[in-house]
Amino acid sequence: MEDYTEHNEEVCEQYQRYVVEMLYQDMEYCTIWGVDKTSFNEEDKMLIDEQGHFLLFLTVEDAIAYVQQWDQAFDKSNWDGWLAAIKLPIEPDTVVDLDLLNATAIDVENVALFDHTVTAKNFASDYCYQIEDESWTDAFSGYPLMNFFDAFMDRHFWSGVAQPEPITEQLLADVVQQHRKLYAFLQSKIRLC
Image 1 (cartoon, rainbow, N blue to C red):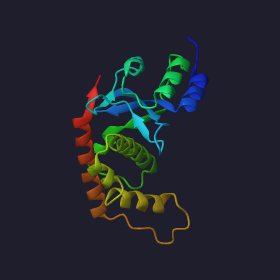
Image 2: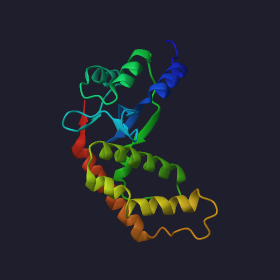
Image 3: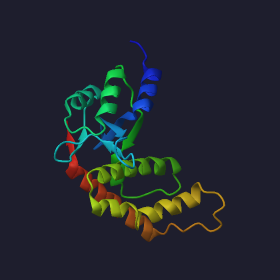
Image 4: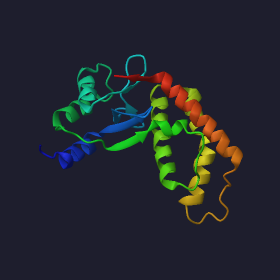
């Protein structure tokens, strides 16, 4: 079998469409995420149906077949260009573990796990902005999610912060609770295809 990795990476960058492996309820799925170049802010979006469900597919081929008939596709010309140029098989660009949002604790010393959790939260944030769910879009920029993100970044990544914001037990408990609410919300919005 031929290796199209380099070709597909270039095509994905050109059209800003990416295959994403999704871990959800201990199963592997995939979806396709992209940038809506026709929107004012070039928002990040994913595959959704007419009811606004977040779509997860068993195979990349199933996701591609959906896009080929997707009447409500955002930024249609870039979808068409991507579909015409990719070659199968195509590997996922990234992995998003949604189950991390259902964790009962957060290890503030595990930087790699934090990075994966932020990726899951950011992906969920993109979805909430896409469907214009104001209760969640407001939550992403407020307490406790933004406070925790800032405190963690102060502690582990941003140099020069003399006295980083403390990560208290209460903040951790509030973040875990908010993540679990977000996970429950996503569960109600995910459609397995």
